[in-house]
Length: 353
Image (tube, rainbow, N blue to C red):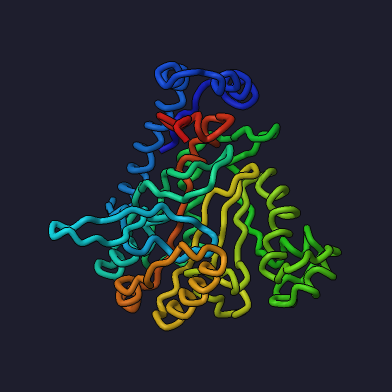
C-alpha cells in the first residue's frame, strides 16, 4: 500500500518548515508540526500493514537489558535494577533489539518485526537524536539479495515517488543501485579496498591520502567512506552499499565466494544512511570471538562501557535458521517522506534533546 505524501513536498515544504525551528513552547510546536506528526502516524500504520500482509509477527522485547550490544563506538545509557531484597544490578537501555529478536527467531523460526525505541548516548545532529525509533525485521530463509528486494518494496510503500533532500529530487520508483564496497572504493577513491585490507599505508597510497598520526587501516577506511563515498551515493537514486570488508562484518556472515568481504549492506538516500543489514552469522564460536575482539576495542576507547557477553544470545545462535535481518532508522524515513529540515521536526516532543 502506498501512503499518500503530504501535499506540500520538495522545495515548498522545506521553505514552509524552516520557521518551525524558532517556536518557543511544546504546545506551539506540536500545533505547527501536526501535519508532519499525522504523516508519521500514517507511516507507523502503513509499516505494520506492510509486515502483517507479508506474514511477519509483531514482537516486543525488553528495553532495559544487562547487555545493550557490542558496538565498539556506541555509548549506552546506564540505569539500575533494584530487587525487593535491596540488591542491585546494572541495566542498560539497548542500542538495538537485535540480540533479543534473534533469540525469538531461534526459538520460533518465524519472520518477525519490531518498531522499537532505542538509545545511543552522546549523539545528536540534524538526522539523529539520542532516543529514536528503530524498525528491525528478520526474514528466515532470505539471503542478502532477497532482503534488498524486500527493503526496496518497503521503502517504495512508505515514501512518495520522489523525495527532496539537499536541493535535489531523488526518484524512489526506479530500481535502487546496488554497489559493492569494493567497486565504490575503486570508483570514488581509486583504491583496491580488499587487496589493501589491514595495510593502512597501502590504502593511503592508493587513495592519494595522507595517513594521520595513529591512524590505522580501519580509521582510514571510515575516513575515506565518510569523505569521498557517502557524500556522492544515493543522490541520483537510493543506493545499497554492499559486501563490506570482513573486518566490518559485525554480526554478518563472510561471503563464501570471497572471505575478505562480509554479507552486509547499508542503504543511503539523499545523503542519509537509512539502514544496516546482515546475512546473519549463526556460528556461536566465531561470533564469540568477534564479540571479545569488539569488547577489547570498546574498552580501549571507553573504559566505562563495560558489561558481560550476552550468553543467552550466544547459546541461542546455533538454533537460528539461515536468516537475514535489517535495522532501519524509522525517524529518518519519516524525515525523507516529509522533507522536514531536522529529525526533531517529526518527533512529538523533539526539542527536549
